[in-house]
Image (spheres, rainbow, N blue to C red):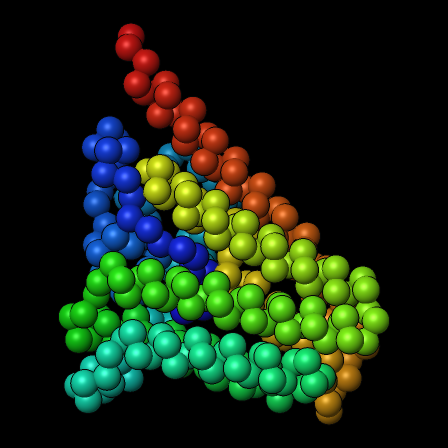
Length: 267
């Protein structure tokens, strides 16, 4: 699980990649954003057709991710030296997030539950550092990591839906459902785009931003803070940002598709 916006990471379609020689291959079937990969230039992955505003937001995300990865590298080396598998770290982190969300949030333990979830999210970020340190980068590891991310997201928003349903908060229930659906669509667009040889790692609300918004808004709602309306503001804000991100990714893929079509038309 990656806190700067990680989404499903299937390998690029080899036929599509062979038609576009400007794309350099990635390692282990993962994209340049996968922490299990070595450093890859963003320009190798981001097509020129991507709008500058999307390019800027994504580049900032990569810088933040690089800083976090560097901070986690010492711990990754220690765990790898102790024989800990990155897949074990991924599994434990995901299981912790799912369990904490499904146990704490339906009970209304928003602040305590958020702290536990955040701790397991941080643990799950270590898997990439362990993989790099131990030289165990693999396509399966990337797939497992992305699957864990989807399960964790579903547990967080599903638990909030459960709570809102039990307490008759219909508008917040709708907001949480929309966040869950739009988050899944955002990840699906990236997955399908990469399978077709395109890049869709753009948008103002990637996974890192979505997690930060929902966890901060939910945590401040619980004791001892009880900040009024903060959870509603966070969820509806996330609905809007997620919808914009879906549009940004579709536009980016559409432009790349048109560019490819123009390149293949004989002159």
